Length: 349
Image (cartoon, rainbow, N blue to C red; front, side, top):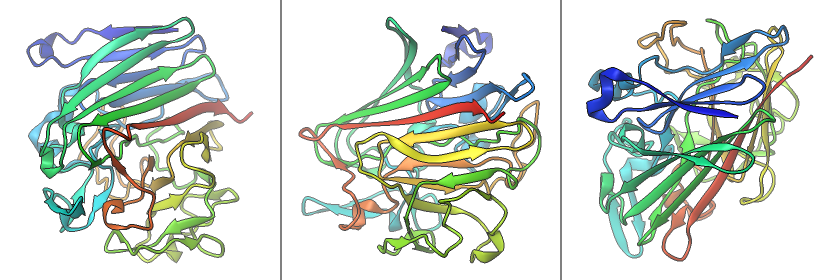
């Protein structure tokens, strides 16, 4: 294993840092303390060639430029205090009403305009006997974006010799509050400047949460017989015409029990042979295919156009603070937050 801090001479005054984790197989993961963001992942294809398989900026400072944050697509960021949407930015808790900042139509999205993705996290390299780990920590004060409670959050990234990127999320609040942390990486296993519509996806979910105007109705319905049934492999673009809005941006109810690490999805890209497996302890996962990317952003290798990357956002269901039948996302002194997601990279020979 190898982990190093990459020297960024132009950003010393802003305390911006970039780290690279590397294992013995040559897989690398770059992470900046700006938003605890994954900026780059390079893996091997079936021909032994290494390429970047996520969308990210070359310069970490780009993640906090005003033009980007005003039209944010959350490239690779750690999302908090609450991933996904809360209807009208309102919820009731403990007999009190709370109002959050609105940043997505009438709704609150991904922690609001100054959510965790905009923060400079404290970074620490952690050594143990088997792996080198990168730990990011952040303190979110009471009334941050309107949320109650002081929250101390910690995200630990571990790259193993088995080509697993393990992300462990922990948080502790001094009073009850919604917490829902995830990673918003956009994957494109081709490693090239092409779309993801021919990627083949399997999702281990017998149910999903239908939505109206991007907010769940509160129902949990079977995927069987719908274009949300991914129990067998389907190409991403295969059934888009069957969807009302021609895109996937939906929450899937992952089979199994919250708290148990189980497989949520498998992705394979035929040309490169690359595969990606997603495991999580969370109850749900947002499958999003980059439909709001429009070419505004790019790096030295590619433009981030529509359908150029897809996200697997492990999570509590959207609008959970307002849906009593959804798994509880409320955490406090007596209930610390602790969840794990694993991205396992492979090759389908």
